[in-house]
Length: 161
Image 1 (cartoon, one colour):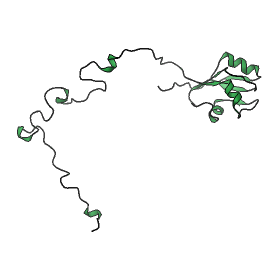
Image 2 (tube, rainbow, N blue to C red):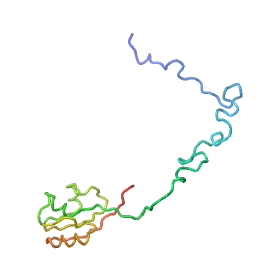
Image 3 (spheres, helix red, strand yellow):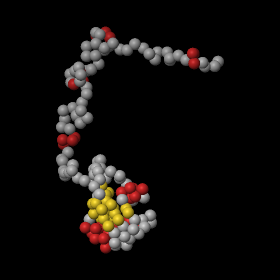
Image 4 (tube, rainbow, N blue to C red):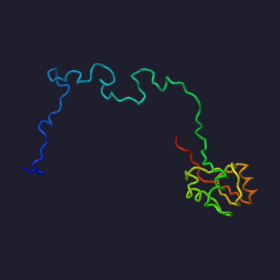
């Protein structure tokens, strides 16, 4: 026998009548309607607690000691060392280095976070570097190599923690 679409039926007994609660002691779910005696879950509109609620016990979040401080005005920076620019094969002498160039060559990762150039490493190429901020040692090293710096203000966002 071939099974046809019109022969498909719901399995027997799968859809029965729901239990009628609060309809007398003989129904099996009378009086308290399966909610037990007293407490928030026995009341109307009860049974929903906030995530940290522990039944009246002091919640874990309040039992643990708090330490430290989180500065909500902290600025996050994408750090770029001048030694990295010297090692990069795509950068030639006299090139203009900006954020788009650094992102396309995968030297920087985040587009929306400000870039700060630091003076770690040696720089021999004369480059024009456009960034959001420069350290004093980076400024000195770039200008000593015959390059120029340009401070560009971009949107500074903080990383989500």
